[in-house]
Image (cartoon, rainbow, N blue to C red; front, side):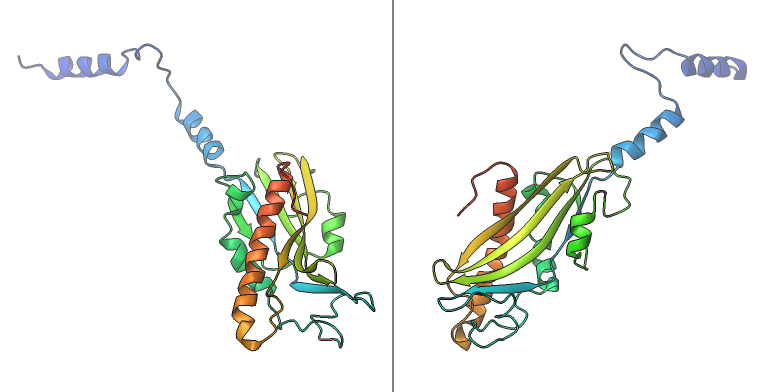
Length: 223
């Protein structure tokens, strides 16, 4: 049956005002738009590397001068130049899966190129980045040391700090500790051992990150 123009308009009007099905709720455009930013807001994990590899050595006849090895002082193990510089740390951090490692899956990870000073790290009580995110955390590598002594041999020691602010400005959760991974090849004794020694050092860097994450969660730290 053919409907006239008035009848067609009436049918359309009835369709537009029909009630929604059971359990359905109408949403205004404004309500839907305001829900989108909250749902899409990214959680943030900001990361800072350290200034590079430092050193300390304890021998039978003398205590260690800090950075004696990395600066080439007489009587200290010879360390390759710049084996774990800030740029190399950044590259290692980029492939570490830090969001999952630290129990923050899905967080947007930002690795900053410039290390923080010890004064900045220790005096800051609020977020280091002016972020408004409701889920915000920081991972700070304060120091990385090649340590060698006549008892334990060589190792890579790192001082790492984690701060989780949540929605607040002050730290909601803080944790910091030294981690240590033994080294057998670093520093290399011969030029032919250089690549293997540096690879071991970088593997120790990754192992220290994993040890830190386990310690933060209450896991047992390696001695």
